[in-house]
Picture 1: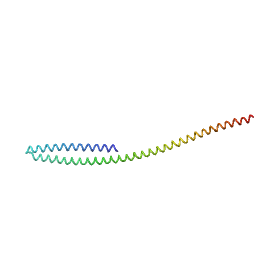
Picture 2 (picture 1 turned 180 degrees about the horizontal axis):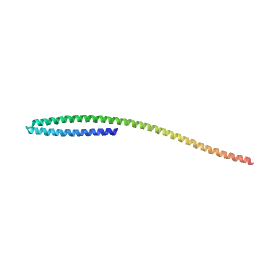
Picture 3 (picture 1 turned 45 degrees about the vertical axis):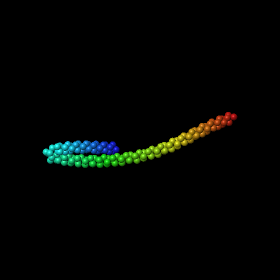
Picture 4 (picture 1 turned 90 degrees about the vertical axis):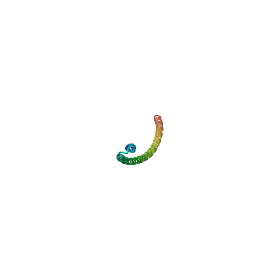
Length: 145
């Protein structure tokens, strides 16, 4: 969605640039028309009509620029909202990761404790085996004597 909004913003900005270029072109045309009108008294009516048309086109172009600027503003607001949502989601993910890391540490500590207990039990079993072996040897001595 961010890419779509960015593409829309780029397209709107391109439309604004084209419209501004068109306005500049129209302004140059109006300027040339006015210069011709002042240098030639003949054709004043046609010059006035051309100027009126050019001014009408400028008016339309200004309206297009206004609309494009509003669209850019809407797209920028949409982008800002999406960025804010992404920031919130990133914070949620960070909190979840921290919770998982904490749980992982607890599991590791429990596993270490269990490993230590297992080692103690193995040592006790070894001691028990030695005691049983000695007891068996002593019992054998009693049987043979």
